Length: 259
Image (cartoon, rainbow, N blue to C red):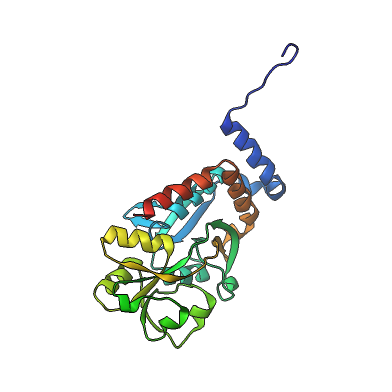
């Protein structure tokens, strides 16, 4: 139109401007926030959420947090350990961040659940023999149930001391226990369970009974200096959601998990 000049800003510049506006209140009085921050992230191997393959750390949760860290100018160091051990390291302040824990009262004593960055997932019950199919909660009564060490599933199940629970440090181990008839049922988040049986090539069935999931979090150790940047994490997450990057990553790993 005559008399007007169209101004087109590159997408990356627009994103940078949006992030600056989102972060302005949190950083206005904190000059140290401009310095690169080394953040130690505790991860356990649980594909497709957290994939640990030697020095390579990938997966849905890792990729989402990397996008956040990139926008904040952070450097990341990953420490791999079984889930229960990662919880302990966060409690002791040996790691700054955990990716994907569910919020519980006990964990809230030493973790700040900063942002529900990851999608909710149903908890499924996997079985191999028809007699071990779970149609209702009461069917769990006499079953040997494989659970991940230190994991939380849903309040009734977690608190039920009458159930027979057999633990292992990885879901791959639990599915192998199921194949060897060492447990009757394995409870697992949907994507993890489906991904694992696909990778192992096991003829495992999914029970009709399931439990709806809750969103899981980026959680920060209360003894970590990263606690000061909680608002920054939330702002950067909001930005990658607005850019469509968050949705793209979720869809990418959903496709990989299903047969």
